Image (tube, rainbow, N blue to C red; front, side, top):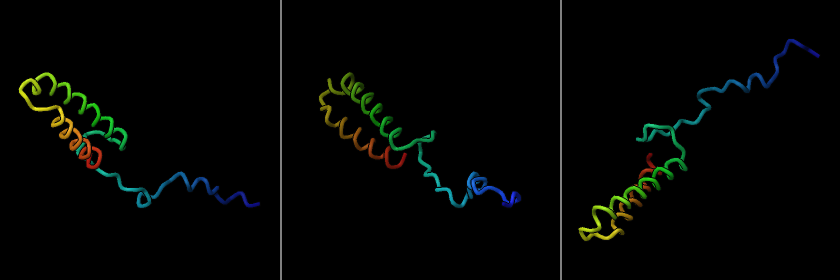
Amino acid sequence: MDHETPLTSLHLDEADPRDLPLEKLGFLPIETNWFDRLFISVVIWVAMSLFWFRFIEPLGPSIWISNAIALGLAVWIVRKG
């Protein structure tokens, strides 16, 4: 048994930068995964709904307009964020 050869596991610790997947850069200023972006979208949807109920709906427009805007914004955030 030759004790001069290094262990193969030592070579696995160092990853070649060319082998790592490129991170997708989005417009959000934090590192996120799809679930984080979905959570951010839901929080924005709730905040937008509360704002809409308080200030916009008494003027006449339906909450469905707010829901459509929030859905479009959520799709955009999850895909591009």
